[in-house]
Length: 298
Image 1 (tube, rainbow, N blue to C red):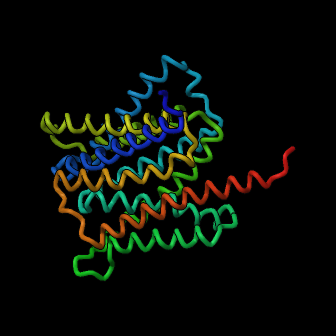
Image 2 (cartoon, helix red, strand yellow; image 1 turned 30 degrees about the vertical axis):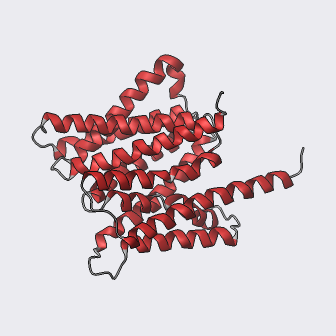
Image 3 (cartoon, rainbow, N blue to C red; image 1 turned 180 degrees about the vertical axis):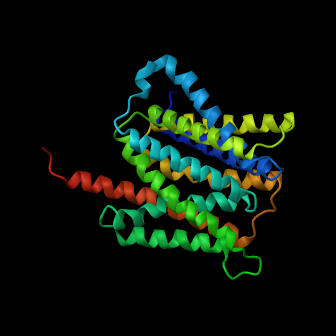
């Protein structure tokens, strides 16, 4: 029996979250064992740009570089490479699962952006879900606790940057093909990382570290390719709730490799962020469907 495209898309999205969870875990291992952050960044983006070009260019030719918003493509790439660099730094002192859960607050924060920037009207339910997600992050970082360090608040600033990244991505989705956006993001990241690399160059890592760095590139590129395939088979609204599965993969990977298991408060916070995020995706889909049904047909 042939699977429906929507179920194939969901399966691909879950596989993508597994890739991202493994990527975060491997990144933490590499950067906490003395590897330069910029070297890890350079391998990640150079690998992505080379593999994307090798796969897409023979199929679509130079037309893949055609974009209707070059400035947004460059801005998206710069934003993502900045997020990647500071995410790697944050992972040096924060467990993978908790870090991923906080980063997954970005889609919830778009609710706030919709009001402040886009002047949209947001329902009470979405405000409550945003508050619930923020409460989840407070349970994870627990300011005021004995072991709290203010450096763990760094992911919160990354959440804001990630939310802007999501807004720009949504805008580009209506202008350019997903493969074009993916290609430009990798190229911008590779150029920026190549400029930074000579200033932080260290002695050549051991060959096992190079293998891990290449594995990081494979996980990142593979995850993004799987997401592109997923969005080609199912609507974003159907896929988004399942992206929160990345929290589980990151938590499992971090626990298996080196991190102690999250305590009960961190687990509760991670569950709350995931629940509020997935529910927000469902609520937004339902609201859009109702608005579409109510709009006059031309």
